[in-house]
Amino acid sequence: MTGLLSKKKNMIGVDIGSSSLKLVEIQREPDGCKLAGCSMVPLERGAFERGLISDGGAVINAIKRLVEESGTSTKPAGTALSGFAVYINKIAIPDMSEEEIRRLILDEADEYLPGDLLENVYFDIHILGTNDHNREKIDVIIAAAKKEIVSKYQRVFESAGLRLVLMDVDVFALERAYEENYDFGDEDVIALVHVGADVTNLHIVRGDRSLFIRNILMGGNLVTEAIQSKRGVSFSEAERMKLDTRDHGDEVCKGVTPLSLAEPIIEEIERSMDFYVSSAGLICIKKALLSGGSAALPGLAYELSRRLRCDVELFNPFQSLKYDRGKFGEEYLNEMASFSSIAVGLALRRMEDL
Figure (cartoon, rainbow, N blue to C red):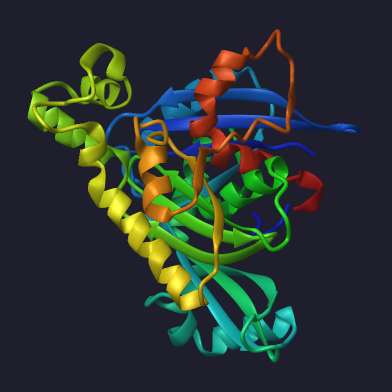
């Protein structure tokens, strides 16, 4: 299996989240990429939390159902680690070869890797290029995960009848989907904000270069659980109420809206963005692209635009992809867009590059 950050014939992208699983398959054709499969199935609550598989049987059954509903016969698959499952560290070091970087990390594991025995961890690196503030140094991203976590993912996919050939990191899959679908200038600074059920990812990029990454360990379930508590309804009903104001109005109860319940998430996104902008020396954020299951929370895009002082729009990971209109309706893809960005990024990897 490839490393955590490797840049890599067809595989399916399977994004496992705490509330649902998403599958995307992309075919490469002479005139571009074509969407071959796109499906989503729910996952039992508690089976997967903050990047960790807690109920392997439930996840296996969900993957089997996902594959069946998609109609794919492709067995190689890629998935992404997130939350507590992955450690990401960006470092600036003297310019050296990839081999030398790996040796340095091994020699000084206590400084560069999470606090665990080296033999218990997989790690990979991605060289970003020359450091903006010191031309004699280069920026390198290190991604690491415990071997026991990676092994559990492998067993689950194998039990579901798939062959796991790629372990990626969610923020980098998101970045890949962005690069395929959006055409910004080399100096344009873009914030990719993915509001998942348990984890919110903030990834700031300039051109094809990663500048800042933060995983905020809260997401849309925070709002859903608050609605559930205030209204005394089931989790699934609260989830529907969170996003659907047509039946319930803007207020969950008197004076309380889903958007107001999302304030802790908004505050953390704003605080993280302000920290980056101040530490980077006043870099203007051109636009923020919003994705994830809670991206469609009424008023969220507007509120983030006001707080972040930049344009905010919903991320569309399908906009540059060709697709069979007899197979995929426009309404369906619009509904799937906010959920599918990471799975699209995974499916864009190519087997021949593994």
